[in-house]
Length: 71
Image (cartoon, rainbow, N blue to C red; front, side, top):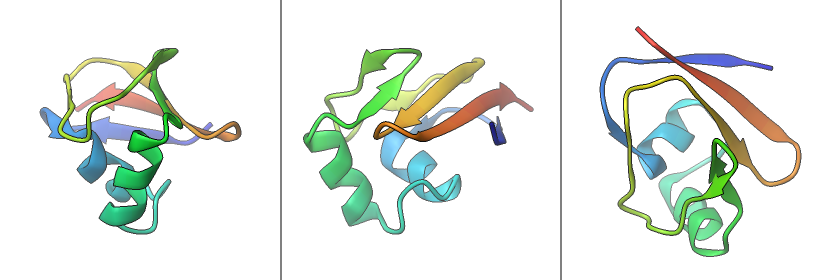
């Protein structure tokens, strides 16, 4: 599983583009709106959701996982 280091809180859309699980911000927004994004097993419903700076697992779709660590 790939790992990404967080340097502070980020929005879910910016984070998805930074870790390359979405090719663009519009694709990231679409995935969030369709319910395809989970953080530690809980669905992220808001496009403006701010990811807290803590360790977590980001899941996009069924097969894309990224471990988030604090830097």
